[in-house]
Length: 269
Length: 150
Image (cartoon, one colour):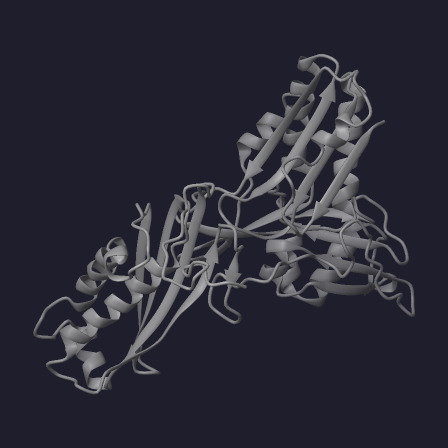
């Protein structure tokens, strides 16, 4: 690991990005400003002497992102394609969360721009509220995620909406058919996938063959609906079905140890 | 039949399929490749990423089955399909289909056919992440219509 802003003699040095390929880059930074509950209330009510605080802080953040190279000595000037700031007023923790996203297609990263945008937005909030509150504190300014570029993607652990774990149905690795546990008595293993799983709040169910009036998909749906009303959704025209991983309709027979999956229309590609 | 399908979490190399289709042979006259990418706008204007779920086992079988159908309908020399699952950011490739044939028309049509069938039959589901929250992508009637052409 080497600091890219130092040259071979250890002197400050602007990195030559001319040979780097232009790729799409994006960085998200966050920070917060803690304040007294009364100040927060004035901010929410728009009753502060300097007017619409959030709108001003947003413009300040955007302007700051564009001028980052004037503030940070060895930073390149970039033509950003997008700067977005989000403010979240948190009454529980008595603070305002600030999030900045910067994007461009270019040869160098945009995390300095995102961090600068957050910092200046926080400073602007401070400036506009300082008449009523001297105790405010700016902290936790940090990079949340970064995409594109040679050093690869970065994602801070445990952060917000972008930190979504990959969902892969079943426990089998790609290319394998996952084999569930065998049931003691003759039964059918049922899986609910994707949007249907989230709507039903269930990912799997086991139905004994004895519970089914007819030993086909239609009978399975009836047996499930008897267990809970939520499974009535399986009779929806949009709910598709596969028996042992082959598409099937209501008349398809099911027997002991079959795997039956219900899922919404597919949206791959 | 010279068919290869792959479903994986990791990003794939854009050369995937191409080199493989041409390895140790010089009788191929055309390779047509299609790449599907994550757009930053779809059902909402600010898509920050998407997560693709699939049905392991059935996915691979379906892709193989679609490739075999293409093999029966056109005169092909090879088919490669690679599809990613899990989290992807805007700009990331999701799927790449490459088809080799002696003459271009077979490869063009087979590639088009494979994508139409993949979009309407292979058990993949997209969940988009946007500034306003997450939602499951709806199927499109136009995809069904496209698939019914064949």
